[in-house]
Length: 463
Ligand code: NAI
Image 1 (tube, helix red, strand yellow):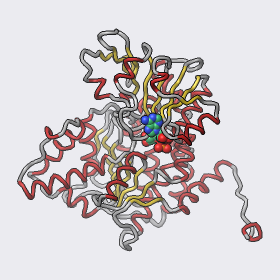
Image 2 (cartoon, rainbow, N blue to C red):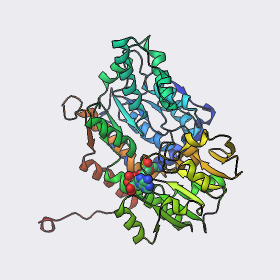
Image 3 (cartoon, rainbow, N blue to C red):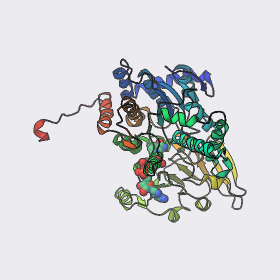
Image 4 (cartoon, rainbow, N blue to C red):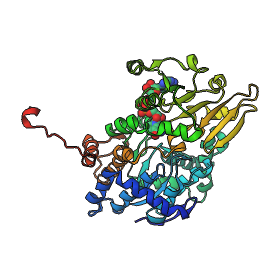
């Protein structure tokens, strides 16, 4: 069903292998597969143009192909430069949708892919966006701001006006298209019915935009659905965390001291995984209740300053904050301490600060595994996945069943809800929670596959 099937992937010869991986994933994603049998015949997404900005993996392919089975046309890019297995991208390009993604994109390439995925030709952009991290939303908002400024002042956006390198790339992309198509992002916005967003940091930003009146379209917040937080966050990372460390650097975790910065759902999952793998875990927290939760699990709570020079592994799970681990901290760490982040942005670990540290040397000894050596001490730290999403950068990430249960079926449900209600005015330019009945529906779609039987509440019990 993909119109204007185009692609930019690394190697189309991997498509058959990618298809095998997708078939394996399908078997583990019963909720998405039952969406196909339930909604396939009636084609409720017929005519909908969906752009996805979400890691291109075999599991995502199952989501994409569920959407196309439901009638949608799809264009897709990744939401991270490292998270694409090239075989998955090749299989999607071959069989189901326009896709622009490969493992190891430059930041420039990443944003160009985003632009391609949003570009549905002269008639504007997508009707719906599936977002993970909010970058597609950012591009449209920045585009509209730039077009308004251009119209009123005649000035093109100036990438040098910001010292944020990613924003410089975004402004360059917008500037390059502005003179030939000065209303591009306005047209895109006029058409857009809504967005479903899957990450905590982006949802936080979207709430702020709603509060200051700058949010341009309805958003369904898939991130805070119960099914996502209590399954993907709380048990999704566990299988991939120790695997990420072991794949990247062949390190034995048992006996090591591991610091987990942040004890939210993801932090809890990581702390448990590292403990199971034999590490002595220490948590840092700013929230007294979460600190107490850690203590109740026999996990020590200290500050980073207390432990920075003693620990072997540092995992940041502190949401979208910046500077959780600074260059100063990294200089105080043991030689070859391992530093990684579960969040999408490279500011939680101060990567810009590390990269620009005078005389610092970067030695890449595995893909997405860099040793950064400080010139004066000759001591270094090992940073995984350039300080972003370590499980997606260094492993195959969450198992398919977790992705199906947790966020992908929710994404499909949210898209369907936005599309079906597009003319009713139900959704305004606000951030909405996923309706609870959809949360429960996603869980119930999985029960049969797991051999569970649900007890029905009798009237007497309910009374
Ligand atoms: P959350 O907001 O529930 O938990 C974050 C915790 O960090 C909170 O308890 C907060 O008090 C604490 N915190 C904030 N600043 C801190 C600081 N300076 N020092 C110590 N603790 C601090 O968030 P959640 O749901 O646990 O997600 C954490 C991160 O993991 C997010 O960035 C999210 O996007 C990411 N994530 C990654 C996944 C992956 O597969 N890699 C999957 C799901 C979420």
